[in-house]
Length: 345
Image (cartoon, rainbow, N blue to C red; front, side, top):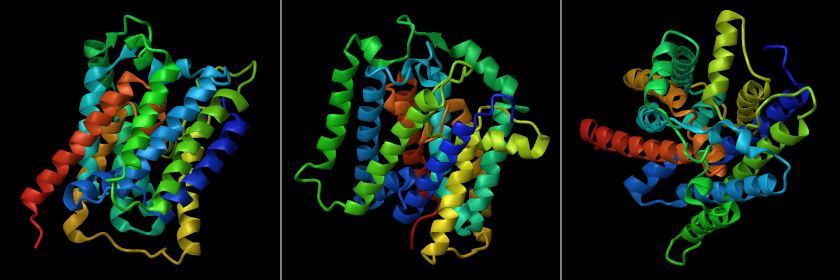
């Protein structure tokens, strides 16, 4: 890592990663599972957990920003440049890739830590593709496409509240309230207290990430932008460091990914769930192609289902909204394609 390495950020990222990995390993929470369970079985319990996570993340992040504790406006999600094509297309690619890989970014990290050979293959493909797109052979294409298609926000920010001319607290309350209303509708059916608790915890971890990077670790010598949970960039940086011996960033993001792996591994050992399962030969192509699409798509989109789907959404960014729509559409297309090409029974 570079000279800007900050021990507070490293410790904070590792701590949040350990908690996140444990929660995901125990709860099996996954955005891909949320969409597929709803589409295929009408099971909305995972979607409920995601909606609760979004609501908690939005309200907590808005509290940090309005209280002046964290300059959320300085985060990458609030950039004045809106990469509408990259976030939409990248989200679509990422979402489709998750259906082939059998899980979202968080789930393949946790799956690899639990001993799943297929998840490990997807993670390796994800890491290599993300590195190539962020720092390698595909970087010039990505940069060219961004320069050619991105637009500058007339308001100088990609905040949805700013663009709509709505007070941020009103928009935050409206979006979070809608999420919670959908979860606790009387007609919603069976809910899982465990999944709801997991969603709440993940939302709180997003808020903690903003607080650590944007407040706790800030000092007069720090120029780092506030950030929170995300995995595409960290995996790419870790891969670059392992392959080329060089890295970038303050250490928070990479230590976060390492913490997730460690937390999931320890949790799987303690719960007797760790078991090495070799990759299914019939699933190898799906694992590799899915991981590759996820890696390229996440970098194009500016984040994965956690980075854009939770951290980005907590800032009420237009780009994050476009990415999430793309991810969900990609998952839906992937499910439809798998049903058509690999019918059950």
